[in-house]
Length: 279
Image 1 (tube, rainbow, N blue to C red):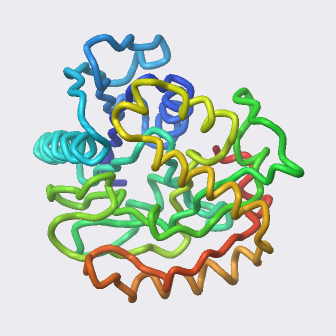
Image 2: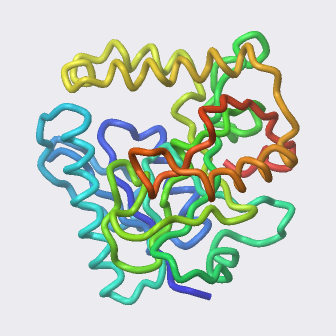
Image 3: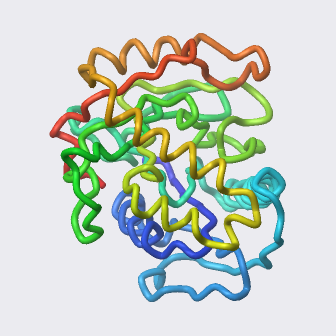
């Protein structure tokens, strides 16, 4: 199997970081995880004991400038990991989890090791998990998230260039690479959990630091995902993801030839029970 690393950057989010470390640690080994803490004021939690960690200085900036700074830094670190002998580098935000369809019967490392491509990145189809307020309670963080959430928006925003196959620079937020197209691989998904709990979103909207850096609009979009999940009729997952993957691999927005598009469709699916214990 290929040698695979995973990296992320985090600030004030031990809750998702704990899940990120547990998930990717089980998938590829904690010794292959790299976490940068955004701020010298950050504490490295005990559960990161076997993980490669470092702190960098936090620079106060608006959302877009901050995202660009973070991705430039992580792209450079990914290049160093390739130079150190890694063959694939996974890059995600701390609330994003790359998962193989359980029906495949393969682990993440087995699956990724078997993907053949000449492109600089591998993508999973974006699945933006929401909260159906009339039937799903506040998240219990001690239980698997997908055992408590069953509905999601299929999102081009989260069909990210998550896995690098060689040292190229990511675009902001891992949404693309700055050289080469992307390919969304069959049976591979990127689950985003930023919209998984309305109470958490509202709490963050009240945090002065995030407000000062311009996060209100971004957090408002997450609340909109919850609203959509609550009102839209959920479609069959397996049939719909086949269509969405085909469309996103072909269609591009006019302003970005190497990002996926889906005709502005807002599609909600019901996540199959086979995923329930994964994350």
